[in-house]
Image 1 (spheres, rainbow, N blue to C red):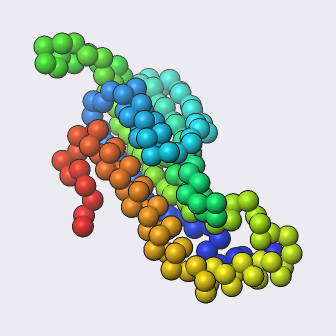
Image 2: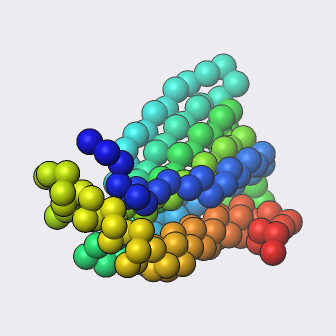
Length: 174
């Protein structure tokens, strides 16, 4: 079957690398709360934990969905890898807190899928009609509302992650 114009577009938003001490459970809870607050339904695709001599290696993959309209579905894919996880006690404001010393890699990608219920699927004539509809009728809506909106929304998630990890540059370049 032929590809339909702008049927499913995936964009890699960014990669965050860090090395330091972080409250790992609080970090995952913050990301979960952010996704729920923004009306995303999400599930954990994968969770791996492997014990190494240097520390624990954790791999976590999340997928979050949002039906923006009845014709467009947004997906955010998060892949998090934490290496050399070691629990440490830190004194903060006079209290001992258990945190995790780790090196981390977080990859964020977003996907905009049009017609996720395949109403135009089936035969070649309907797919050609959908292709024409995407190219000439709703092209601007696809490019400027759905794709740009999803990309900037995912950048807000990236900024929330950077703020939680207390990066020096909390925002991206403008």
